[in-house]
Length: 309
Image (cartoon, rainbow, N blue to C red; front, side, top):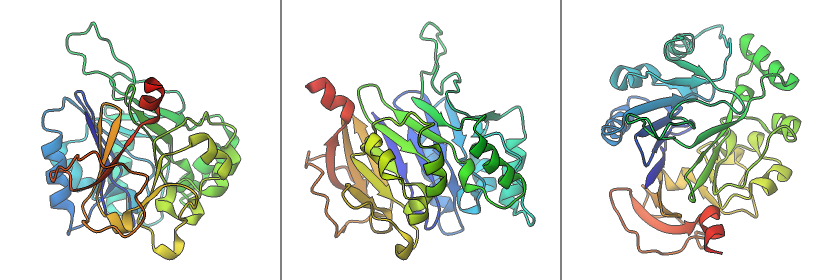
């Protein structure tokens, strides 16, 4: 069993994966005085029996690093994943300064790129008695030799733009769920690199740029991803793209979303009891569990469906 949690943090992103082995992964950070104690408390509780904790930072915009200092003061980040970059800001916040300190600390930082491998991220030695297993995380982007990506890095170094240095990565459970994140990558940049990425079929897609139209995934890429569910983030509704023709969950309404992944099935829970939009694409498997929230239904993963055929 593994748990994927998407926190409702307003106009920002924060997730965790509680893997089915000794791994625990946190993706981005967006906390304030109202939610920091509850979010950190939950993370501390959920990771207490895990041996390996990593933090993946997609990019250093404030809505992805807010509260990073406070989070580190409690959990002690010792595996900090980000793309290699020299991002600067004219008026750096304390959070950005802290991001840079973690990024530049070669004792804890690991720079991600297309096809990279790392012990316990996607590589493991089953003969090692202290082996903690693979987290099932793989990076599909960036290609550090790509000219468009180099231009995105240049803009970040100049302090003018940061969204397009976001990596693309997946989390996959053997014979189970497959999920993809793209940070805040913008639509125009996706068009430029669409033929440079091996787009896999996935079950859950977290829409880039919080579901904004500016991050809308081109249809050519969507057809390859073939997601069963697209999670649309908490940007203001007038800026959202609702991905017509696809099954969606809107976090503005669902609030916290938890995916409990068990034996090829994914059980879906919201922290909000009422959800007025169509969820007929989910099946009632009677998986009520108020520890996760209000049960909304379940679906069979692509991998499990292939095995059953």
